[in-house]
Image (cartoon, rainbow, N blue to C red; front, side):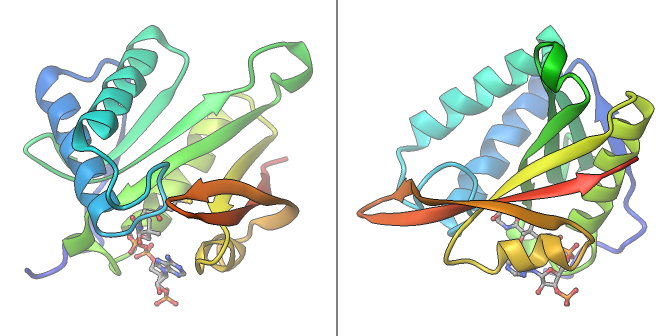
Length: 176
Ligand SMILES: CC(C)(COP(=O)(O)OP(=O)(O)OC[C@H]1O[C@@H](n2cnc3c(N)ncnc32)[C@H](O)[C@@H]1OP(=O)(O)O)[C@@H](O)C(=O)NCCC(=O)NCCS
């Protein structure tokens, strides 16, 4: 399939409807099966992925997560979420989590656009910094570093991916 052009826009979704919730769950399953580093090993049961997707959507509806999407509910291309710190000493920052782009829409700048939109949203929310974690043994820490993020820590053997233990790399983006 021809990759989606760079002109796709990103949107913040405060109240995901049923169609978008289904599209997000299907996206997460497809990205996981493709070997993506988003919380599951590639052979994770589909029901487990869909259950966590449903809880994630509930958190968006409850206002504890912000959801940014690229594409439409009828053809969701990518997502990312912000989880602002809960409590006074971490209220100036958020975690950026679950960045994923459809396998057949990659390489056209969608993830970069979603990250830029997340940084803009965080700035609008008055946040000072973002944190993201990336699975060791992948090119992902370098992917973030190439976009201006700084690696600030590595948690050895923190992730169990199937039978393998992987390091977890932490990256920070300072907004102000
Ligand atoms: C990582 C991911 C979000 C990038 O999406 P994308 O829309 O293709 O990214 P962009 O088009 O903005 O950027 C493409 C660039 O990123 C690089 N890149 C993409 N995935 C990468 C990876 N896993 N490791 C290292 N570099 C990667 C490409 O090589 C390309 O590099 P270039 O600009 O030098 O040509 C996408 O590959 C994905 O969904 N992967 C599975 C889920 C995942 O692992 N998410 C990361 C959670 S931390």
